Image (cartoon, rainbow, N blue to C red; front, side, top):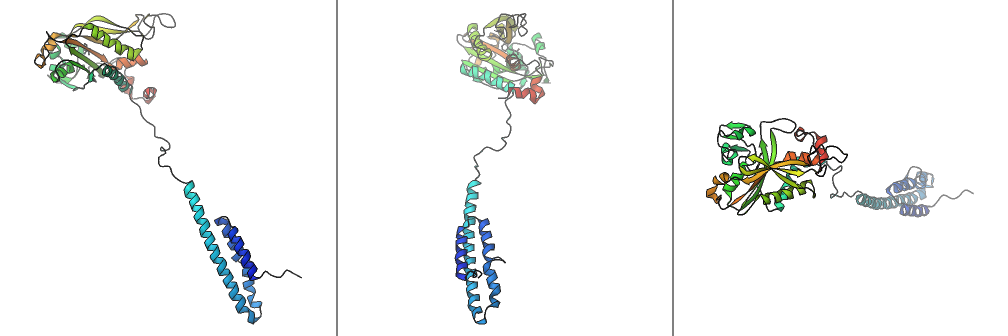
Length: 354
Ligand code: PHE
């Protein structure tokens, strides 16, 4: 005897447990097909209602429809619950951390070696109590030359041939004009440095028409050449290493008296003149010393131009110095050609990325 077909009550019971057991929206869709699809036992049963005796058709048809409607409602409820659960999981898993850095992080530029070197020099002098000033690149002949003891027609003007904008306005050839401007703006004592761009009509491997200097000026009641030497020793050791020495050699500038050129002991050979491999050291050319800047005691004639700002040459005195930032950077980092600073070749610049 074949198995009797399942009763509506059995189909309803099986359906309820299948719906309850479905664990995902994909599974519940399978269960729907199994319970209510074209080949589902309940569908088959409904299709065969016509074969029943007429008096049973109404009741069985009604009960079958009620069963489908009840399963339909359970399916919808369970599907909604499963979908909500799945959405929660997805939202939790997909959460975006808006505090994470962008991907990929955009490449950063770095400070130009001239800027790095200028800042290092500034740090040394700020540490010694100097203030940092800036001044105009377009300058009066008066500040660039006359007030620095180069009267019109003085032959030393020829040492710094420059770009004139008019007979008495030019691109400054050095930062020294700020000595006089700074003293006009502040009574003594004064301790300042002045970094900035300077211009000369020069162009070769060690000269560009625009370059950078740092000027220094200190005026007080009892400053001597020994103070200048101490300040520059601090600079040399900060920039070139703690073992360095400095030496002052007599020189000439119109606006300092006495004037000196300042050498630092060679950091390639340690001051011996003999290279680490033996033989004449190439950096200092065997001398053991490398020139780094010009300096001197401020000429009383220069103070005479600011006497009515409190600079009485009989009461105050001091020193000034000026250095090329490119030169310091070239020595310090072994840069062979000044023009590399201005070619903007990233392969060069990136080596000093900081
Ligand atoms: N201004 C001089 C130059 O450019 C350097 C210097 C500055 C010398 C201050 C003495 C004092 O060569």
